[in-house]
Length: 596
Image (cartoon, rainbow, N blue to C red; front, side):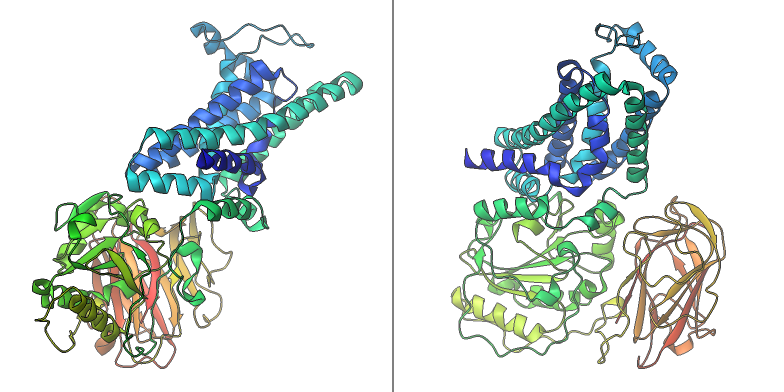
């Protein structure tokens, strides 16, 4: 009962969320109409659409991400039509004719202006569209509900929680709508401004649609938020959520908990005692398993388990693989089980076929759980790639380690937990594998260039004239002056989407002035899978001895899969260099630079 109450209160607080602002014009657009025939059906449709999307998110796989995006586009189009119908009564009349023909339209008394009878189905349809836009707005409490559903399976309890959340949101919106309706009625009677109110509402709806189409509902409005519903909801969540293991250092907590970590700190001395940091969370949220049947904590009791959170385009994750493979082989007979939890960063990493190919190419033989919905990630309260969790034979988390390096410390923990489990014949010494290509160890000196995303959602350091044109084709010109360190530029016909830049015609280029030993770029071939040829230059010349694993000495290479490509690997990385890549074919997809 307490969790139902908190879910309801979380829904009530949703009206304070900044991303609800573009939805409010749709709610108030017909505030001057009767609540029972207009406001109530709209709120009902909104609640039903939200509950449907949220339920699918709880039980569905990676496909729901695409489905919800299409639903969002459909909702934007629907609400744009509604806004036009408010501005232009003739548009409303034409839109209502099919409803009359189908017998869906409900008869109501004519308004003061003699307009056509209003339909109860129309506001219901408006509510459905509004619900699709509102669904991504919900905060930590909804996240807690969906996490429970993902970990324990969908149930009647989950549906009741979602219903309570939707009811709370609709309660606050209904109160606002009733108050707004009375206010508009007074204005209409006293000032005879009903038609102007209708047109203003239509304008507000179209402005809201424009904000949503440009992504301002989740971008600008979120940045304008200061201590609104997220903080209030989080306080409620903290009241009911079980205690968490101690968090990692603050330096590792960035970008909403999705962090790639390269840790060069020296290993601390072995601990004399490893404290208990929590229980082994459920693995039931995995959408698929590779190299193994589905595993569960109960079935692993008596084994020492190392859980590794990774994603296959992350350079920091790739460089840990030689050690993970070596540990899995060295200690398998002593009772160690290594489990890779693949939690994707980019959309292409959610495709099982891509992960299967990566697992095969990377030589991974231990079990891998596909965590496309981040259910296992949330169960561990994880916040970084890569991340190691060491679990003893009794199913208790005894140690956590984030980032690369400190492999000697990690192996000492494995040995200690195996000894606690009663193993007496444990191989001595520490492994020292030599990784090749993208799995090779980073340089001795830290890279002075950091991860750089090319999609407009997280792009920074862009130097081409005119800036980025979001989600539309543009002919980019090279930077007018020499690039400064950690600046990059496009040249050619590109479309920069949220998480990637896509080349529309051949001979497009990317330039980046970097300071590091190694340069990597996450790339993909054309949308139809056709390989894309490319050529790399360093300081205007072929890389020769400084070429990466995926290029030859003249800088030539081919993109044949969506993955991370090593394009430059120098003997030393102390000075600035200008990197340039030219794609000889159209269709190349470029996601992010990483360095080492």
